[in-house]
Length: 617
Image (tube, rainbow, N blue to C red; front, side):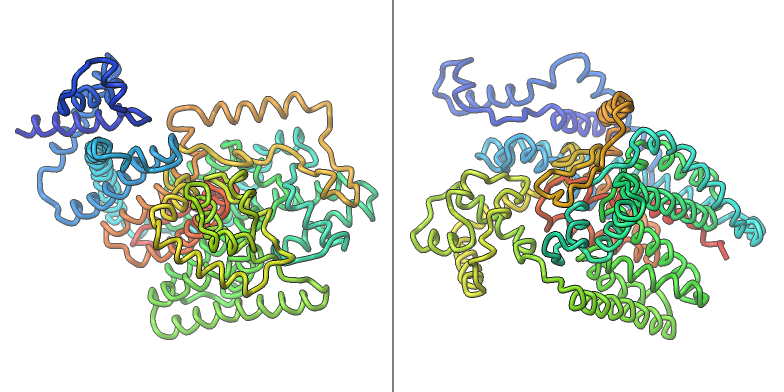
């Protein structure tokens, strides 16, 4: 009976793998058989939908999946109710991501799910297939993780040698190793790459254009200072870019080394240590990221430091030394100052951190968090007033509603009242011509900043609510279409690609006429590296490491694992990463690697944190 059940499960899973990526119409069925019989037409459509299931490859895949199901069932004879619940929730979540993500990837809507009753029937079959697959994959992972942790807890306490764990010389060894492995990129991409936003910030710092809070103040100061040193004191614009990027490289190598040292300290796992080092030393996008002048690099490093110190806070039950508390509060300040929405990470995290410790330590973490927020806020306000910095445009906060409005305008005829209200913020014609379902940048750029008033915004949101009541599905689809890449691993990177491989300094922004450029004799090697990275992105399994959605999946898997093994205190560390996922959902661009960079950088260490030994002192 068990074998029969596994065969049925494998059949559903194979159907999910083999479904068509477009809606099969009645006309396509009638082209094969001329009939008016309803059931005959739908039988033909069913066959056409799963046409890819035919062939030797599908047969081999079917046998492998069936064996996988049978192997898991055979190894997991006893019923574990907690395991069933946890993996069942995971199967439902991942099945949802795949079914809906596939539809938005191919059609930019959910018609492959809800297009018609037949399509709903097909998507239900596919959902069952994916649910079963992910449930059993999670069962396999949960059992493996639990066995790993059980073995770890049986280690003798003497294994945790205090002197051995505190050997800080390893930090220097890791750091030198990173710099040596990244040296070819440093040489070939000299003076480093630059994002256009960074040049914009430099021009603001130098007073060439109006300085606003659209970009965080602290990275603007850093970029501007380094460029000032290179351009005005060393008379070499390239050195201004290079100094900043080398500072990022060295700081990044140190923080990675420090983090690997700590994870090794709490796990005593050589595999984890070497795995983390190899990932950051040899995975090619990391030296490119750290060698790119862009604010997200600084924020990602600040978040990594904050998470590692949060781990120490939990392990030591809040009893940090004075120097550790100073470093902890500084990391909070950097999280706040390196990204405009960084304060939300602190606000959402501190209640969970407080619940993980006892009363006096609870007071200290609350006080430390609010001290960091207060200092950062006061510093920002004073610096803004002193340097006459104005607030950024409100259009950045309108990404989600404007995207929903843009889709509504593209699909439905507007009333005169709707046209009048929306046109106060952005021209209706511009919305129709420039609507892109995966980015709001084009519509946002045409926001009437100079003329739109607070009263206009109030009227817009009232109309926005009325339009939602008329066609709520449009709003839901607009949001899903602009965010599914953060949950669907098959959606490749959007906009700027996997990393910044250029010095983006257009004349329209380069008002100071900085001469920042690559060395022409290394162009061949730069192109080879870029092409090689994109080729690597298309390799099986390895390619997933470049995917925004895949990291969200890992985050969810880690959450489910910690829940299953009843490590609630360790789950506190995951809160900042979930906040970043929510921020990405509210961002103007779908599947943007630069926005997911903080999670991509920190999540490998969170995976290591999951295997922290309970015997560690």
